[in-house]
Image (cartoon, rainbow, N blue to C red):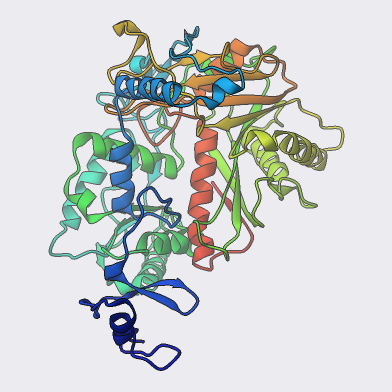
Length: 556
């Protein structure tokens, strides 16, 4: 409807109404009107936007990048800004004095420890894809970062049946060259990667994604069925994405839930600007997707488990994600992941479920075992042993929900254990992970107490002064800082500890786990089980928004 050529309730032309009533001659009648209420519209040229209002709608990629750059500050700049705010607030506010309160002008000085990095094992062989005893070496990744240069995967995965499809402009992307480089890098890092795809590179239209993927699956299965000793279906599908919003989610939904194919997607701009380190990181991602292992810790996980180094331990990560602001139709998604190997703790399996909005995970236990029961059963099948101990890292919980999580979710865990086997009562340690806390740790000015970015060193742990006087909690800054930003330590709350961890043991275990994330060659800011749970739930968002699979799905 053309607002300005319409008429008001009394039949008067709106442009004329503004001129007669307010003596305003509207200059830009072609602009949209601003809706200020039911059947109430205002001319855009007469309005100004008040500064400082909160924007509650989702941000696009460009806005998120701009926000990140605006928020980033070096640690010394952030510390200086905090001090200035405190001094200004103390001078201008007399209310706190009326209540007999005061704010210290200096930051609190606290004692901290720096945990040593674990020893990481890597392969020295590129000939044997399953590394024999002795064909490995170790190193200690000081500084929280390392490279895979002259280092190879501990357990290179096998990719005998693969294909590539280019959904972008074939004139702008050299898909053949990309595939040749991919095969070369993966083989050089220790993967058993077939040099030849099942079928030549396919080129498809961006608006025909479903048909293109279905044809690839059908045609590749037909070829593999005629090849002796080949897998029945593709083990990897390399996809160069089109420049079309929403295509990534659609591709992942189809590959994950309809075709059952492992996929690796590239944006066109990524494919054209890959350096050596980017290629190596891509190889690491693919290796894990096809069942390989990049690095392992040299017994570091076992040594931090109390009482016995030989008792199988399963490590869970759990999270609940919610729809974007303004979305009132899609459900919340709960994700639980669990380690499937011991003592390496490098492979995880996920269970996902949709539920009404809320932080308590509904399907931890059901009459058919639930997410916990099924994952314990899978662990026993994978390792040959039922887990003798359970460690669960729980993300996305506020302090006001601690008691509810401890009560309801621990009850579900007990029921799931009973489902696995009556009288099965492994001790449980339940830890809540809070990355979005309001505590910043700044180093002293000594250079040996900070990393290259000016942040506190990786492995810095604090469990006094700013922690609870009687409860079991600690701050751990496990990752190396990014230059130009202030890193935030993660707050870990131990709600239940039936394994009787000493503080040093649990802190070291948590820090060591942060070196095992498969997607990067650096330590991460919170334990990988929580990262995997978040990524699994985020991936499932594509399924629900596209009207995908049923309420419960399993992923490895």
